[in-house]
Length: 217
Image 1: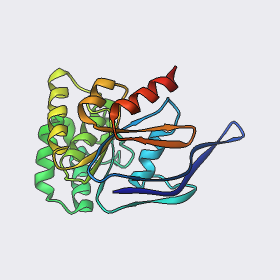
Image 2 (image 1 turned 90 degrees about the horizontal axis):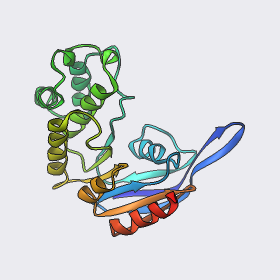
Image 3 (image 1 turned 90 degrees about the vertical axis):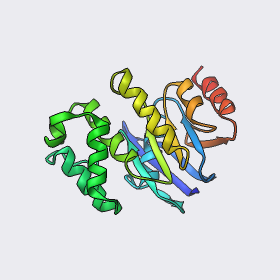
């Protein structure tokens, strides 16, 4: 369960206050795989970071009775001066999981080769995405926050990413952001649409996609 209580967030843009989340009150169902839809700039990434605890709201709070991942593909919590392996070791200690097992999983999954033992600041954006996705998938969370499951890598790597994510979804929920409607249909059963600071929940993913496409027009 993830519950938003009087949640608000705004930014100052060009001397004007822009509200991206407006007094949000909603409870998301436990164990659901939800598509998060909205136009570019609607505030999807902001909401994901607030849920993960990486950004503070202006007011209100997010309450959860389970564990939540950081937004996958968001590398802001990884230290650039540390190697990929050192970052994974630090994350393992923070989340209380077996260090050696997590390092072995990520090294095999991310396919970074020698770069796994080089500073993260030398990584390309794609390499960082592989590292963060692999690290997140290597830890069992109740809810995964995911931005584009198959955004990086060749066809074989994308197939592997989809397979491990599908496996995690058998026991966990997720909030998934993607520009690919087929991908959302594959992994999500329900949807939430963020527009003008308001969030609408749809039990049927097709209803969420229909509203999103209407707003895009």
